[in-house]
Image 1 (tube, rainbow, N blue to C red):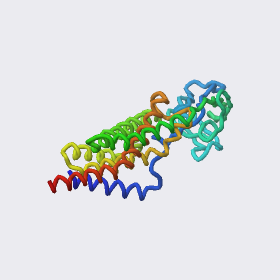
Image 2 (cartoon, rainbow, N blue to C red; image 1 turned 180 degrees about the vertical axis):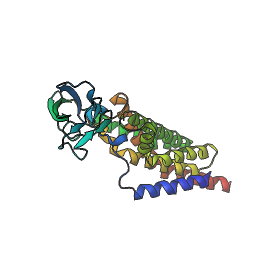
Image 3 (spheres, rainbow, N blue to C red; image 1 turned 90 degrees about the horizontal axis):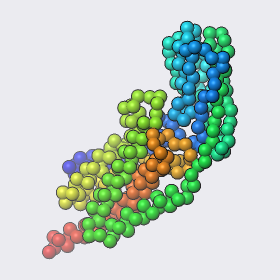
Image 4 (spheres, rainbow, N blue to C red; image 1 turned 90 degrees about the vertical axis):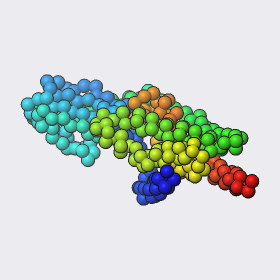
Length: 295
């Protein structure tokens, strides 16, 4: 067990140091924004031609059920221009409709449009960006701080600080799993399994590291605390890009925004708290072990 934990710790640390960034913003490359985008109308209507906004407007989806090819004009980013053959479908990010990087105040509406070529006939797709009110970030950051501080404080007051770190580490892991799962379920433009595995990233090593450490602690092996601290710390680092959830209104998460923010708070706060408390707990366990041997 201890060799397995050591292997996971070594690999996780190496991957984290060599990666360009600890995590993508969210699963599927989606980002938190302050607005939603939607398609309002397709004029003139063509039977079989359907254009919709998905993932809160991050992408457009065009289904061509007509007998002619449909051309998406250039000007919408690297995915354009594009030609959709009859009977085919196209999902793409179009900068003309995407809320990513757009400043839209709460309650404000911004119109957008693009003109398709449907077999030689111009077809105008019109839509709108609707701004939503972002949360006040201060209370959420206060919750992160309270969680991070509570872990070392509680661990110092109890006889078994290793069990406190085990519980906090497992909490950070559970919140991280739920966060990744919810982010994955918000993606409509990619296969579920591949999106989940990609969103997990280095957590596929961090989570087993925490579980392995917890098993070791429950078996009375103090070395398990080191694995829990390392796994929880790496999990906290991995969630850092997602702290935008504490500042933005529209989140790429399959559930209420408040749940996503709570998951980020628990992952980050508990992870940092375990990492901070780890050195003190390991020192205490070592002193107890020495005292027991002398006795």
